[in-house]
Image 1 (spheres, rainbow, N blue to C red):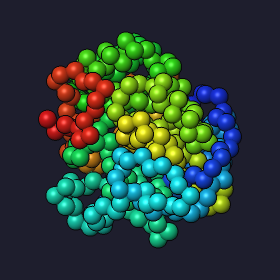
Image 2 (cartoon, one colour):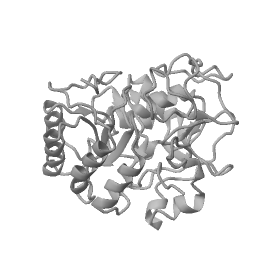
Image 3 (cartoon, rainbow, N blue to C red):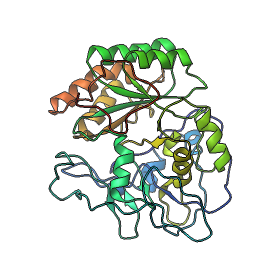
Image 4 (tube, rainbow, N blue to C red):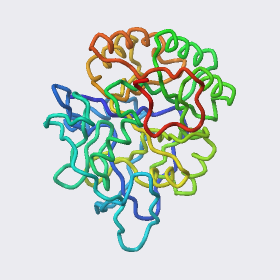
Amino acid sequence: MSEYGRRHPMNEKEPPKGKTGNRFAAVLFGMTVGVGGVVGYNEVTDKNIWDAFDADHASAIPSVPRPTEVPSVLPTLNMSPTPKPTKTPRMSPTPSVTSPSSPASKSTPVGVFMPHRNANGTVSGASATYRGYTPEQVRMMENCGNNTDRVLLTIDDFGTPAHIRAMADVLKREHVGAAFFPNTKQVSTDAIEDLRDNGFWVGNHSYSHPNMAPMKPEQIKAEIEKGTDADLFRPPYGATYKDKKDGVIYFDNDVEVAATKLGKRVCMWSVDTRDWDHQTAQQITDSVKTHVRAGSTILIHMRDEYKTLDALPGMIKSVRERGLEFCALPSEPTTSEIPESLPCDK
């Protein structure tokens, strides 16, 4: 049974309980189906999900009752629908895409994981289960703009300036492009600009890393606005909650709506290294080696107390030994305007 796809609880205060209004959401960590031998996340049981955390960690993701109605879809992923009494289609269906068991098309590199639609209308991605999205729209959120068969490394949260710089130095030495998602409460503007000057993309990860699932729209908006000025947004904890009725952890659509209204695209992930879960450097490396595939989006963290920095060289080597390559490191400084289609192969 795989325990991947589950976000770590940060050492933040417990987010507010409850949330008014109808909310449609979808799951993180636990509902994906792998291809070509990758373990399917939908095999993860409640027991081994919650046993993976200390008692104080488990409280970070609240149990919030949610409606079970599945909305239809809207015209495009980047539109921000205004809630109406009647359920307006959230996104228009996109053309059919390659399923996990089908041969890859020209636009879908061989080996790339493709989300799939479940019988109940939800979509199982690699990092979550979603309501109101097509498999292609989920794929767009989980690849974060990487439409190549290269591997995108993404680095979340916060760390000391020296630790962040040390991670950047390893990546530059190995010519690995990466997207950092810092919390601006702990990471300074100078550190963010230093990363951009060295060719790394820097996205928004909120100001203080709250779980946004139980938050009201105006609270979500305020947290995003105080975060990094960037086109790409990664929700803290993946913006998820556990539904009491079916026990499934869903992605919260309201968070995507709030981000879209602010002109930001949501960036999830497809491989969670679990570096936050007291993993050794070797365990982090092994998890990448086991689960990485063409087009993967790897989630790691920049916190000093994690063993991620020590794992970086071995992680990079293990990906290359699989015959894969990372997104190219841009030769010029980056800005807050992150391309919708990342130049990973240039």
